[in-house]
Image (tube, rainbow, N blue to C red; front, side, top):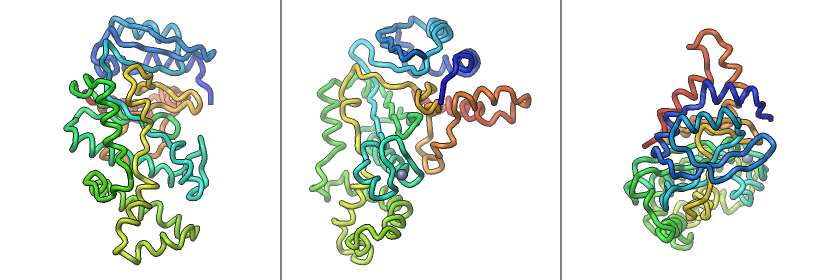
Length: 303
Ligand SMILES: [Zn+2]
C-alpha cells in the first residue's frame, strides 16, 4: 500500500482535522512533533506555534506519518497495545504471527482495551481517555487528564507495575474485575477455536470443573489480559503516532474509536488514504461513507 503525494495533498488540504488535533494536543507550542517523509526521512524536534503553522508545514512536506512527543516535562499518559506481543498465544490459536491479524486474535486487543480502560477510570479516576486504532494490528490509548499529563517518569513506572500485577496473585482485586470483563470475550471468541483445535484437554475440562476458577482465570489472562509496551508509557519523550495519521505499511487511517462500541469495530474496514480520497469524488455529500466516518471520529478526541 502506498501513500501517494497527490492523495496526501488532498488529505492535508481537505480532510485532516487541524483544529481538533491542535486542541487535543493542548495548544502547546513547546511540544515536539516529528514526521516521516515519503523517502523515509525522519524529521524530529519540530515545533509549531499554532495550528496555521502546522497546516502550512504538512501541506508543504506531505508526511506519510506524524508523531508527537512531550512538552516542557509534560506528556499525556499513553499506552500501546500491539498484537505482536501476543504471538506466543496467537500461534496455537489462529496461526497469526507478526503483522498478520484476524478477527479472532483482534479480540485480544478488545479485551486488553476494555480492562485497561476500566482500570484507568476506576482505579485512577481518569476521564479523558481516547482510544485510537494504530492503523495495522494494535491500539493506542491517550489519557489527557491534567493529573495524568503531569506524571513523572517514576509515577509512570509505578502505574505500569500496578497494571502488570504478577499473575500468581490471582485473587488480587485487579484480576477479579478483569476476569469479569474477559470471561465473556474468552468464551465467545477464543474458547470455540480452542475446542475445535482440541488444543488442550485441560482447557476443555476447565468449563466443566467450575470449581477450578483459578486455573480458568490463568488461562483467560494468558490470552486476553493487556500486555502493555512498558517503554512507550514510561518515557516522557517517547514519540507516538497521532490520531488521523496513517500507518505507512497499510496506508490505513489511525482512527479514534469509541470504547463503548469497540466490539463492533472491524480493523479491516478502516479506510485507507486512497479510499478517503476517492470518497471525495462522490457528489452527494451524505453518501461519503469514509469521510463521514472520519468526521464522526473527530468528536471522540477527549480533552
Ligand atoms: Zn489471528
